[in-house]
Length: 159
Image 1 (cartoon, rainbow, N blue to C red):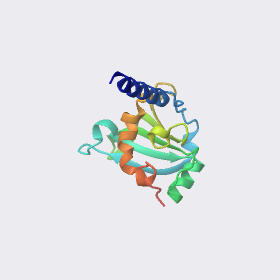
Image 2: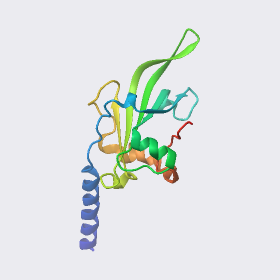
Image 3: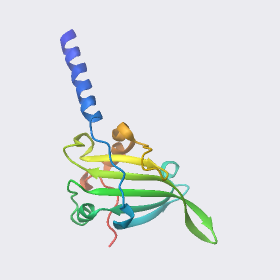
């Protein structure tokens, strides 16, 4: 009985180590010059307000733009979720401070445990302070599994 348990424990640790060895997602330099996919505001009362309340702008590099149009994202696709505080001023909703820059990078081989996508969030205006790190499976991918039929992407291209 001891050998099967040891084997199971060893395999579990090996799988965990492989997931931990996935390359870190890089900060997406120049993303605001990419294609703007859409914007939205998550307001109080929305189920995701506590985590994602504010103004969202979504950007796609050229490969991700093609993926939005075809429904299948190729390796090298990058989607950026730029989340800012929403503040009311002068009868308008305006952008406040940046909360996070969320990034999805498609690389089927490197991120096979998370649907082929690498996930990261960069805090505020920092290009180095990470919010996700090795917790991508639970912090991001767990919710994205509901979008498996859309290659794990929630957003759709606005024509």
